[in-house]
Length: 319
Image (cartoon, rainbow, N blue to C red; front, top):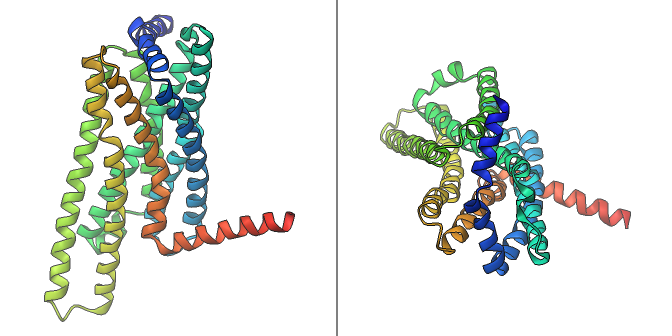
């Protein structure tokens, strides 16, 4: 059974059309491909360093609730893995392909093992990032909707169970794409749309609830100061997570129409170029999130600054 599915995947990944996709880019868009390669190398390093700093800062911060901290750590770890695995692999594959193309070697060398490994980690981490953003959105919606009941229902233990389930699901999710090659693009498109819709609906609802509570605070003078501070804290936390979601949607959404355009018209070289650019945007999301954390959370920003200063101070002392 496994042999059959492997052959099927090899046929799907290494068809003449798929190989022609790479050959066209390497041959006719060499400057673009070279730039794509360099950008992936540079941003792979930036993603790794940025998310390492963000993870350290998140672990040290005390102002962010434990449940929210775990969710952001899950997203930061998935972003870190993007820089270490699929983005770095993309840069290496691109560099090797450029060298092979210039020497006239057969690009089928990458089929199917290297492509399978690359696609597996790409789908795994994209799923983990998407689910993390959705869970953060739903958590903030529950926080502003349930008030005091939120702490009873959303406990650190339950959040841990949800996040473990998230990562197990992300690890299993790529396998249907390996064993069911037919219709893989349509399935990925449908799942992506569902994720975009869920995130958008959650934040629209979140925005409405936050606005409603804000109006209540201003209209009820008898509201106690403690309640006011808590409502303000929840509102600020909701807005902070909103920025993470907006960056996520902006980076992930172009991938779907670009992929559809490429699949429906493979003769135009501009569509593969757009498809590659949209893939880079997905990886770019992992590099932008640490900046969002630093921008929206002062304690994280101060922790990152302190860590960077310590690193440079150590280097100065060593020199």
